[in-house]
Length: 124
Image 1 (tube, rainbow, N blue to C red):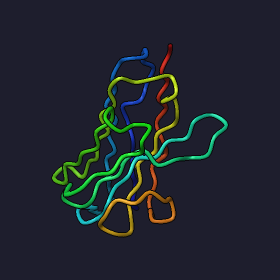
Image 2: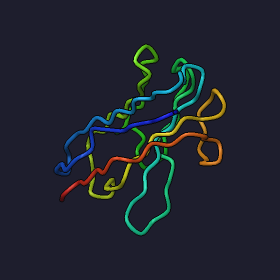
Image 3: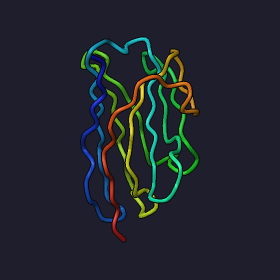
């Protein structure tokens, strides 16, 4: 059974940092692109960051560019999202996802597997 399990969420003050982790089990995603999405209260889920296989390329939503960094450790089947300079508007449930292809993708339809999400709350 394929599973993606996120961790690392929590409550942090504005300006603080958090590091999210997503561990995959059941199969290797070494050749898959991976992504982080987020869903704020009352809003649709949106793309935040993506990384291609081997970490060759990354892409970020404008709202997080320069503050968030996505990375992967294929030996550990783990993807990370380092979030710095957090803002209250970053408050959301964060989901990791494994893509069907090897690149990064901004649309949910390109991802076959999803984690259950981890809550990030940024207080002002």
